[in-house]
Image (cartoon, rainbow, N blue to C red; front, side):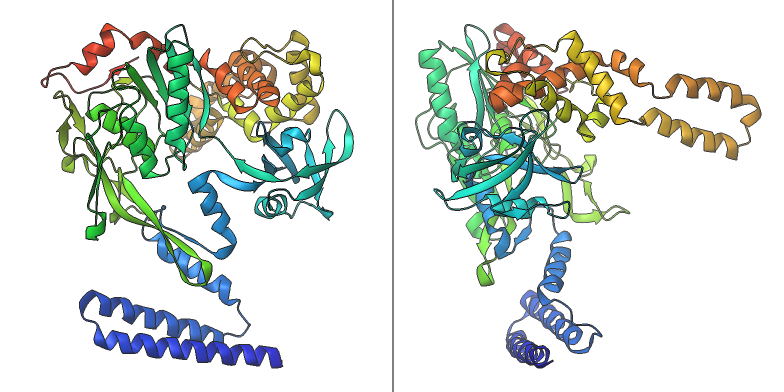
Length: 567
């Protein structure tokens, strides 16, 4: 009881002092600043009142964390508060570096499971594999209640320190103890680079962390000088962005020194800036195609949008995400940090590609609406081609994302593909290492997959059945059962999930996904990308555009039709 009272006294004195200070400043500050301090005083008094009068003893940190998160929810999803316990997460996002073993873990059916191992880092060197179940870390047992963040904290640590990890290896090996020496892990931004044919290079950039531009430049020079590359496919699909300066430096690899790349504008004059190419380009005249999709955002859109605005590259894929906001991290009290949106950015033509208006009217669920079509302006590239603001980056050539069946999505969601790939990989020894490109499941492997699903009692539903159930309800409400009953019964029978039938119907895409998972076990992320290139319709379209078509697109007159071509 004494501890409770002393805690309460200290809290009351602290809050009283803060309230007095805020009240003094509020009396001195006019306008907006008065409103800020006034509401800070209200928050402080409510916080104090809860601690003084609430029937139970609330946890101050939890209350404040909830209050901060709710406040920032009213802004945009990119303005985020980081307590001291999550500072390392912020550092990893900016640098791609952390001290640890170089593996991703995730709970699967209540078990902490390694889902990916990074090539060249301690986890791989110690022999850990995707599919290994982590039973304990440093003697601390893991159970179904241990969350991913807690496991990550146990695995991370100072470079050079050792940690004992007990694992259970399904299908081979059983339970074993593995000693792993932690190291400084840096997940590369360039996941893969190589040649698509004798003259066409390919670079896949997964994120914009510190040093990304240097990685791209190194890959460019290697492909050009050692592999004979004369034209490049630069892949930004799935790249959610990162550091603005890195995006500027990457554009600088392809445009002359002094070219304006992007500008920013914010409430503060400090954020009204123009960013220009400061160095000599590495590949100023090399024919260039950039690939984007709906997950290409922020820094990816600066690169693709500016290269489009300057008529420097042909953009292929699907419309990008539409994030035209810039964040900066600020130090807060007690070693916490705030990542806050400070400006909007504008590509070389002057357009802002921000899709959602977070400062405008929200929909009925409280979500931000897209900027109205009537408010959108059209800008022009250097050569006079029309480009529109407020809708992300629209590709010059649109190639739709390949279809994924509901069955495959369910197999992935339930980790059935992951588990079976682990089983297949366990049956391959060092002499059976699959080639990343040509590897294919055997007929017995494919038959075994069906057997494993039946043994596991795998069940699934489809969107078609969900819609049919809704239709059945509407038919009942409108009293059409008599005339529609037979037709609905036939439709239900045709659409009823049938595992054997549907595995045959969608065999190709499921096979490719399974084979990719097996390849990932042996050749890591780079091997998976290399394999996917042979099956990728967007890459295939990119290869076909070089030559007269690329020159024709970039040389279009100002009065050319603005709609992208579709494939």
